[in-house]
Image (tube, rainbow, N blue to C red; front, side):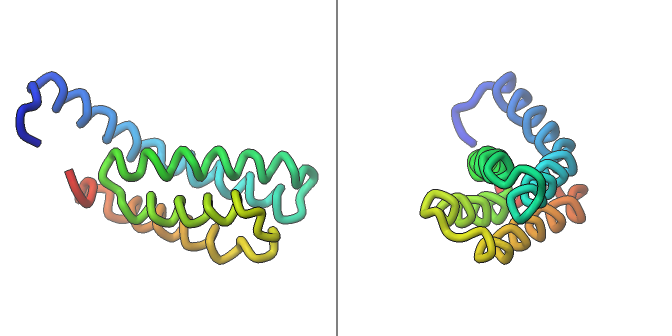
Length: 114
């Protein structure tokens, strides 16, 4: 990125590293929200948490160089906004979780774009 100060570049590198470290927690929160939404004890709460988690991943994935996470999260977010029936969200949730798993497998490689 041109025209950036070294301090900003270092700051963004720290935030990107923090995002990578937090991916397992994001995935766990996503899985827990999905479990509730798809028939757990609190379907409405699960959907609300799912939507919040997906929205966070859509923005942060793109910001920190993980466009596949962002794209999958945006797709799921659109489905949630459109109030698609829960039973029709399973594939979208699985695709987002696969994108997170792939990012975790490739953590040593860093983000896809800078």
